[in-house]
Length: 165
Image (cartoon, rainbow, N blue to C red):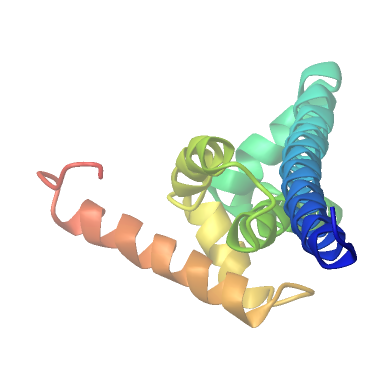
């Protein structure tokens, strides 16, 4: 075997090694993406569960949420402030969900499932009243998204025969 033939064989082996490395890196990225999505799913679920557990463990909080969602008329000034911050916390979780979904780090199934909850939440008059006067700490893109969901809910109210999509 000549030196030239050895050089060709070395080049071929080098190309094979590069392809093998690229395949390995691709598999690692795929595995990392899955792990990131699982972590994201877990964090979102934990956030919602923390709020749900708060409602379950404290009837006063559940009452405050129920009355606030119906409309702030049944709340005193301190309760209105509490409801406002509860709503803000709730919407920050949804904003995180929205952001992660749009960046590809959240599974579509989780986003679609929680989107149903969000669409249900925006139908309440207390939420709509709070949303209209509380543009605190939420991104412009997310506010536009929620405004669209509210318009969609209001349109369905005006046209009762409209089916859920």
